[in-house]
Image (cartoon, rainbow, N blue to C red; front, side, top):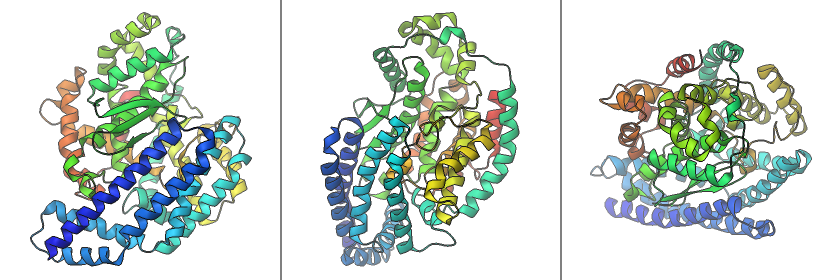
Length: 491
């Protein structure tokens, strides 16, 4: 009987995954293709599908199946992991009224469009109302779950299971103390942007070069594609359908290239999970802190390395002839210039985490009640000046630059820094494996991908995030590997 209960859960969740993948497709289309006047109906579509998914999964019989299946000692490791995650999800979802779930889905759609317009016009007032609604809906959501000390703890746990302010504060405090002097040293170095980089980079040539690079590191274009969006992202729409997006700057090809490498890192993870497990937790990434480790790994450890540019600069010259004036060392330095700048997604590695920590501190203050809605822009600007020594010149370069709040993604930002720490920790471990270091130093990254596929991608959610990283690397993660990486690359 217990096996029958487990089989019923698999059948139900496989069907619900089709609904979730359909929602992902509609969300992807909203950001890439949808006509502006389609917003209201798209909000209704996603609201309806969210409600249907929620209603079916929170049926009391699902709880009965979970309880019955958990009593079966014959289940294998993957089945037990699926039950662990289903039980966690069921307990959380049954706390939420379906009307709240539908309202959140609808508000995210309209908020995204308001944010995109506000960012384009650099006008915070255009995003103020939907931002207020999303903050209140997020507070309401975690109030049903329950939380310790602050609603923000409940939000952090959405993206990184087991994460709390106390845990992240401990990691960030020590890391930030070491990072700040490193940032100052790196930014003080007298390194100039090569004049040879100045030029016109047609979008079609950027797209062709980016595709060639992404394919070379293992992204399967028979199971994915690249499109253009306001904010780069990656989304999986089901087995063998992973969508990447980037944005283009005709004056600097590096913006789209590193956007593609970042999102291709996410895509490699999606393409690396076992498709036979699709619809179950073992067919999903375990957390965003692990997911971001893969994007940051391919963007930075690979894409900004000397070995990468020794291989790819001659190819880049065929697309962008002005680069013929540079050698691989100069190109690598240009890819790793340390400069304090406004935009997180275009920041260098060494200053990047200061952007993340700023957002984390803002979000903590919002959900503790210390920071009122209308105080957010000034608080952002003040913290930015404190960390970067620069006056924010516009809302678009300040609190409106990121898409995450328009998605209700409060608690997401810390996973970027966790991803950086995980990435350096994993690369250090991978390089000790036979052949990986030698291949990487020659600009060949297939053995690195194979190691990640074996240790990270194929596991799905078999283990909790911290355990997965420790099993892969042989020891728990700490900031040291990442600080060593930054010192080596920038100093």
